[in-house]
Image (tube, rainbow, N blue to C red; front, side, top):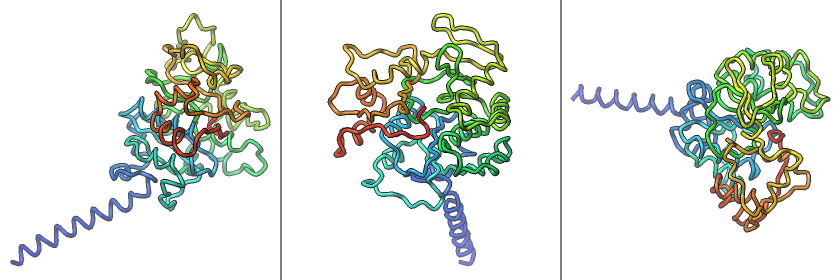
Length: 340
C-alpha cells in the first residue's frame, strides 16, 4: 500500500514538473495555436534548421494582406522549414488577439510551420558590431528609423541563426536552392530584400562592421542595398551577367535579377494589370512586388483577373480567401519597413 502511494506521488510529481516546464516555455512563441510550437524559442528553432525570416520593425500588430501573403507563400514553398516572423509590437505578455480584430494573425498562427516572435533589438544585437551603435543612437532623430532598424536587424538575425531573409512584399513561388547568396536587383547592384547565409558567415559580420563605420541614414538605401553592394564589391570582382546564369564568388552566389526581380521597379504597376497571358516566371524563385513604390495604394481586387490577384490565388490561397474575398473587400497596399 505504501509503495503504491509512493509510486502515485512520484507520477503526480513528474506530471507537475512537466506542466511547469511547458508553462515556462510557452512565452517563447506567441500566437501559436499548436502546442508543439510553444516549446521552441528562436534560438532552438532556427539555429539547427534553415529557416525563412520576416521582420516588422513598427509597433503594428495586424499584418497587412501582402505581408500575410508573403509569409503564407513562404510556408507553402518551404513546408519542412520554420518560417519565423519577428515583430517589434509583440512582447512576451501580449494577449492572444481575437480572430475578428486580427484576422491575418489568426490565419498565420494556424499554419504549422509559421512562428511569430517578439523582436527585441537590444538582445538581438548583443555580441555583434551593431550593439554599441544601437545603444548610442538617438532613434527619435532618425527620420528613416523603421527602415534603418530593419536593415540592421536582418543582418544580425541571419548572422546569428542562418537561413533566408525576405522582405514582407516578396511572394515565394519555388524553393531557393542556394545556401549563401545575394540577390541582384540589376547587373551590378545588390538588393537586401532577399538574401541567405549559413550561420556566422564572415560576409555578414563585415557588413555589420561597415554598417557602423560608414553609417549615414540620410542617404536612402545606404544602410541596406547600398551596403550589400559595397561589401559585395570588396569581396568579389563583379562582372556582367551572361544570359540567365548566376555569378559565383568564393563560397557565395550573386543571383541573376530574374530570380526575384523579373518585373523591375519602374514597371511595378504591371503587377496590378490584367495580362493577356500571365507570365510563367520559370526563371524566378520569388517575386518582389515593390510595395514601397505603391504610393497610389493600388488594390488587390477580387475578380479583377490582375496578375497580383492571380498570384494571391495560387501562392497564398488562405490570404486570398480570408482577407481578399472576405467581408473587407478590396484591399490597398500599406507601406511598411519590409517593403523596398
